[in-house]
Image (cartoon, rainbow, N blue to C red; front, side, top):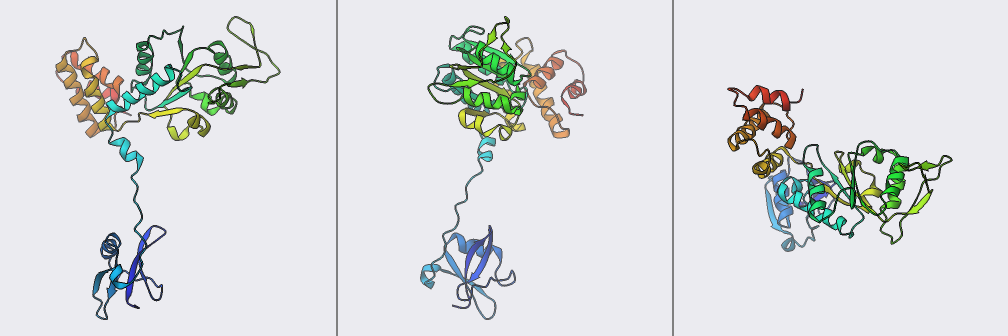
Length: 314
């Protein structure tokens, strides 16, 4: 058995281990492809005195080999292969769950100009919910104190926080959100300060109250940069599309976009964007497509440079 080697993984590296001595074969003794095939087929390798390598089933050789490791797919690969229309359909489904009160919060992330805000608001409105009455939409910077007052003033509503990324970088704001997003029947949140907080009418806001509303976050930041406590308490949806997925998304929405622009101009705009993507680093999103489509609709003889000036990154 001294010339019998079994394929083993050492810190992820595939090597041939001598069954009798425990020593490892050199690259000159056994080639990597031979080890791969032996591992795959549950075989061991005999190395003759002349250096010839022969694969034999491990069971026949009386060697109990270690099963080959299960190679798991990367979820990122699955995301990159997903149809973008399905990704946005899932956002619509998750938004409806928040709208119906089945889930207290949803975090939607992805690049700018993807249509995240539009799909959230249109979904809520499609459920018969009215802005300012059933849901409110806030956009921009928010402090911990401002967040606390906003939650208090809109306690019975769905609160859409759009591009309010500053709350994720503020420890006090994150702690407020932890309380607001808990899955308990009673969600109490507090803001203890020597200075009283006041609402938009100048009335004093209590230092703590029970929060019964729901929150939808819309952000351009990466999911990996979100506070783990916020992620664990919320549904999450990421629409950080690849270039190919973004072009596919544009094609899916093109008939409904820019109704005043002829279809031929839209087709030309999309083709120019693909040409520019092959040559330069460009911004590929719905906003850049709208710019390109409007330029192409003007009928310029050579619109490519005009489009490039609008969507190419400097």
